[in-house]
Every structure is written in C-alpha cells, then in structure tokens.
Image (cartoon, rainbow, N blue to C red):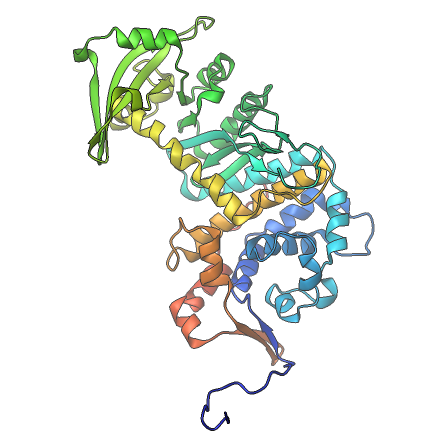
Length: 463
C-alpha cells in the first residue's frame, strides 16, 4: 500500500539529535530534592567515604540512586550503564553526561559501607521524620512497630539471608511507621524475630524523646504492635516513658477459660460499618508479670451481614495501658481523654493495624525485596537508601502532588501518571527548558507542580 492511501502511516525510523526523555516527570522530583536540602545532608553524613577529589561526589551519587529508585524501571544495578548513555535522562535529572554513574561505580560505592554506617542512615531517616512532624505539629502521634519480611528465597546466596517465620529465606528488618512513612528501622537477618534482643526497647527509647523535642512534652504518643511484641520489658519501658500502647495478646488457655465462664450480660457490642463485634473487658497479665493491664477479648458477630458460627470466629485479645489512671492522658483535653478511654476507640485502633502494614506494601511497590549485593553491609546501605527515598517520595506526594494525584497512591500509579511523560530538553538563551505536550501540561497542572517543587519547606540543618 502507498503512503497516499494512509497519510498518517509511519514510513521510516530515524535517529534524532534532539535531547528527549521518556521520564520527564523526574525533573520535578529532582528539583524537589535539591530544594529541601537532602543532598547536603547526605554529604555531611557520608562525605568521608570519598577518599580523593577524583570520581563522582557523594551528592551526585545519592541523587542518581534516589532517581533510580523513584523511577523504578529496573531493580538491577546494571541498569545504571544504560542510564549513563541516555542524554535525555541525564538532562532530566540535571546531571552532566560525564557525571553519570556506571554500574561499576555504584557497586564500588556500596562496597565502601560498613556495619556501623547503619546508624548514620537511621539518623537521617529520623531527621526526615522530625522535619515532617515539625510541618504538622500533631498533638497526638500514633505509631506502629512491626517486622517486615523481605523475600530473597530465589536470590543468590546473601549474607544475612536466613529462614523467616513466613518460611521464606530473606531479611526481616524492624520498622516504625507513622502516617504512611517508615520513620525508623533496623536492618536484620531473616532469623531475627519481632522482639529480638533489645532492638525494640532501644528503638522506643530513641524515638520518644525525639518526638517530644519537636512536638513538646504534652504530646500524646500511642504505639500499636502485634502479639510478637507482647513482652513485659517493652510494656514497662512504655509505661516509664508515659507512652500509650495497644498490643495484640496471645490466646492462652487461661484466657479462654475465663472468657467462657462470663455471662452474656458482661459482654458489650461494637458496630462498625457492616461488621459487629462482641467484647469483654477485664484486667489481665501473664503469670510472670508484675502488673495487669486493661484487656479486651473481641469476637466478630457479623461479616458482610452474614452471621459467623463460633468455630469460625477470629477472636482477638487486645491489651492496653490506656485507663483512667494513665499519666499519658493527663495532657489531653477532656474530650480526647474520654475518646481514648472508650472501648470502641481501643478496638478500632487495634483494627487499624491492618492499615499500619500498608506502608510495607507501599515500600515493596516503590522498591524491591531482593537486594542486589552479597555483603550484608552493602545490602543494609541499599535498604536504608530505599527507605530514605521512600520517605522522600511520600513527602513529595504530600508537598507537591496532592492537588493532582491522591496522596495514598502507590508508586506504580505515580510513575505511570507523572514520571512516564515524554519531554524535550531545549537549551536556548543560556537557559535549559523542559518542554512537554499541552495535554500533559494541562492534565497534570505541571506549571503548578513546578512552583510547588521550587518552594518546599527545607529540612532544617539540625533538629
């Protein structure tokens, strides 16, 4: 067929010398990173890794690592070799072609990290958390502590990859979650269970003073945990710090016997949307504990308007230190105090643990579970880079994208809607201009988003 019969038919493929990119939206993220001052913070912490003036600076390396993670096109380090040859990509992330890192450069960089560098990464992660806290200054801070399994079962042998409770070999970091962000973490081998050693206690003792340093001594802090953290040592530390907790209990036979002996009139009822629960309130503690705590035994009655038989009911035990004598509630208003003492509030907060795990899913959607290196220290550094990039991604959504893309959107959605747009980079009049289609400009309100990227609240030098 001739071209005349199909006037819109492509008849030839040729090479253009124009600088074009299929990741035009990355320019907004790069501008945001530079204006919140995260790169100088990374250089301050890890600048000593650079032994000479030769090679790429620490800031240029971390910028490309964060963009690699945010882009999400590949999880393989060798993808840096392809990016290093892409003029459009380099121009989009505001980097000279000679400063683009190869895969060998990235591997050598992560090979420099040692075990002790994890503490520096945590310090940066905490500083970002305090930056976000300072922007909202919440009177109530709800946190969650949980372990996350990173499945490396099919990866080549990795140092620290060990069997986990999910019967997969991998890593099992401990993570603290706030407002969809992972704000503190300890990278661990797979066999380290939820409450391994003093890791949880140390995390709590580390984070509570930091939160109060920003939000004040009167801030009400409550932490949710699953039954893997039911330990008197942890609960005692939370009591000493005047921090509320809501933790899942374990179905000991003594608890079941007590519950079975209680008459029906002792049970309350909690209705939420299409589900209802019966609950029994009592004081309980393990035989070896010095104290007892306010406890709720809950069992669902309906599920999607369908009654459940007794053997099919997923019963729960909920333990909390939020009672009438709780010192942490003295700083709350009368309305807040009444709210947090209600059985329905405790039960609903416990049910929120399902939502607390969504950041784990979000992190895995943003990054990946299989880590690329064989050495534990290198994988630890890469994991913390992923956490920092993920927190920056969540902040980027809140500070820049909230008018265009829902804040709760996963990384895949943001990438397809914002990052994967065609752009042309034009150098004219000593200016570099990113040009996009009219449809992309109008649909994504790119002019408005660009203004947001240019004027975010920067990360304070010290918190």
